[in-house]
Length: 440
Image (cartoon, rainbow, N blue to C red; front, side, top):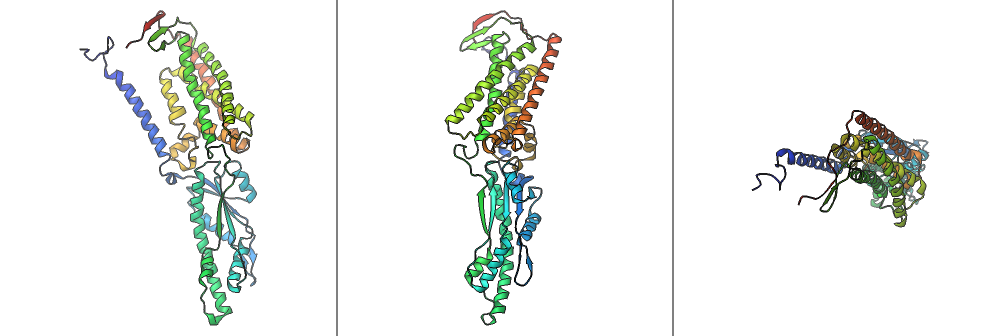
């Protein structure tokens, strides 16, 4: 009988098993809530989703001398009918809309063409005279490179809004044509032929098209997200590996290889000196890993129009993440592992904005996206890979955030470990070097 103890070990009190069980359960619960909550029923969480309305219609003066401006009518109807809490509908020129789309500041744009009123007027006249006419074309631009799932939101919005507008304009045209036909040929009554009625009931042709087509080799526009995730994992996971290996080598933690257990002699290094060593190692690792990532991406056929910018951002991002991770570990010890897990994985991945736009996620996830590292890195990688490495397309935000994190991590790490060293809080276990078989 063991009386609740391990083989020659300490009694299994609740304290021994309760803390791991609670921590793991809490981490997994938060993970599930954020992952599922950020993807289930995303349409219910829309907030300030940026879409432009471009009214380029120049209007037309009819034969009777009346001024027709259908574009203004449709644009006004869209502005009045849209839920402004869910959508940020911006009235822009075509040039402004293309500029914003090209910098991932818009997820879509509804473009009313310059000849909209003219073609609709001609359509009504042709229904009376029998002349050949064509329907005006409204273009709806999506921006799948800004976010792959944003295109479906834009498509749904445009479909609902423009269907209502199309029916309203069609009803008005049909009334005008009916009146004109009755006036021109009273003997035939007010009836409009079925084919003509069908065309007039939906007089506008809506064409949905991506502003920029998703290139091959981008994983349907997801390569930026996965590349950013790799950068965070390099800094996070790499730091954990380096911390364990360095601590073991310097005698702060045991080495275990299979059944072998060894405690090296205590090195006597201060906390600050040990942290500086880990930072230096991870800086070198960042350069190597960034180079390896770039080589693998090129070998797999990813479009790399700006390789140097991607490499530089990768080095900066990995280094910044590593510095913060190492500082947290140095200041909090074992608790730092849990804090880092939450900061860089549990809270960071759902708020990245790669799988779904942050404007289609719950408010708590949008809030996390304002500071969580993965989102900041993602918009920078997205800018480099898809939007010409333009500074205000996300690259500037990524560089600024990484630099700020780097400075904050360095400052907190230096000040914290220096304070520990000055108070004599040395990492010393007092045990001699030993090499024993690990417990079975």
